[in-house]
Image (cartoon, rainbow over the protein chains, first blue to last red):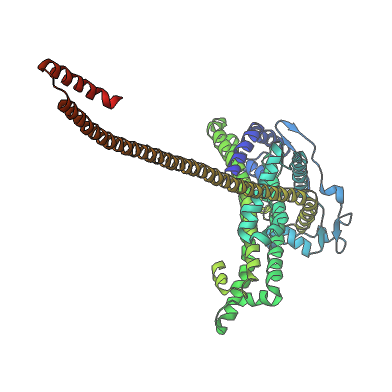
Length: 354
Length: 173
């Protein structure tokens, strides 16, 4: 745990100077939007900007203060019009059909069901790729070791410390010595994937892919599959289904099944909402506090900049904390699945796990 | 743009994004497992094994050294004890030998003394007997002379004197 804190402090020191520019960012864009559209009140203009910043999009614009860089049209590289490239359609015109008013909140799903299969990478996908490029760079820089295999240098120590943390404190602590080692590569990937995606979003100008529902849904589905596979592999198909009915009298079995079955989905659901909400809310609050400068008056900067700085430092902690929690809970669920196999061998252990 | 539409934009779930996340994650998982986690975890395992082995062999060597040290100490103590025992035994023997020697010498001296005393006693007895015999003989001679010769008082006196002188001379002769 001590190493984790050291890391967080170190990262805060590195990221702090970069943050200084973020305060101006909005000014540049606020003017931009105001200039092009019809006059609006500053409050709705700010919220529009913020919602635009945190939502996934087909294009990515690197946001710099006072400079307007051309947007990268990520999606258009894979198909500009419906029917081209990965922009698939079940029948021509399916993508031009507007979704109904009641379906607007989940427009993406309904459009997909209506036959508009937009599989083009978006801003979130590009962000993930950039984050993974950073991860690859850190791992590459962290490959130096002496002849005894002891890591040399900051990155090598950082990577190994985190990897061993995942192995010892997350995998082995929750799954067990033997099985835990087998799941370590998967859990380490989850941890580094989420952590790097979270941290990329904290570099001013970049986007937080983990603050998009689709990404956390995808990660949770993988966790869900891994959890169920762990259970089936450990207890066998019969034991796995038997567990869903629990050790209760026969008349209670249907009820138990309902509870256990719902439990299968609520666990990963809580996981995906927690990560998504944490990453989204942190960024939104940060921006709202800063936007007070433009909405109220410039004097608000005296309050909002220190507040936002503190919040940013908190976000640096939350980024690794959420990666830790996501990985920890994944390990916990896998551990529960692995424990299913011990039910038949040791009934006493059964109660200890539930 | 409508704020409501924008507000709903972050609850929007795009199936395409889910699929791309899966692809990205699985590719990253496969690559990192082969290139990063595998070798890293293996090197850590090897290192841990090496450390455990080193600690174990150090422990073993230490216990061996301790055993050797104990043996050495025991051997030294034993040797010391033996040496002390030897010295003690030698001293005792020496003492005994001295006692014996002294006893023997004393006995010899005593024997010699007793022998000398016996010889002296014998000589004395013999001398006394001799003197007694001589005295008898002299008395007889004196008596003889007195009987055969008539002498005046001066002559008696000189004769007696002569007799005594002779008497004192006689045993030494």
